[in-house]
Length: 192
Image (cartoon, rainbow, N blue to C red; front, side, top):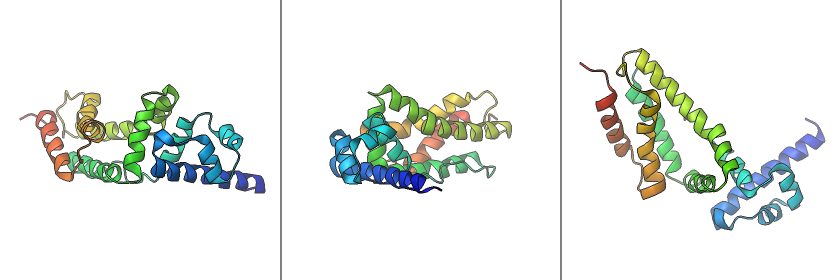
């Protein structure tokens, strides 16, 4: 890595760290490019050269946080595999820093089409594809009814979690996930 590339990488990390720190301290609504630049020790033009908007900067910063463990394994038990990932996601979203930051990111995506598109492309679609692939394997293995609509199955599984996270702000507990899985698989499981 050249000295210039190393400096650029260090600046990028400092800017994203400053963004996350300020968002946690002040809330996303009060986050400004100027405050991020000052905290990171760079000029605001340095920030704007990399990110054309506050929303896209925030998206990059949030998505820089570790989300390891959200990929599905295939143990041969679809319910156990889904439960494993759903509980990891619930644990991740149920506490700082991820939970509050992700809620703010979803909120920003409702107002900024560029943020919405980037969030979908970089986080939602890969998560959806991974879950859909696992559901398809389960369907092929006879663990799901042969006529199950996999897109609808994904929405039935994720919808209740997002409802609690974003609408009612009730905790997404492991017990709740078990109840969601039980209800979903009562309708999606193989028929006798």
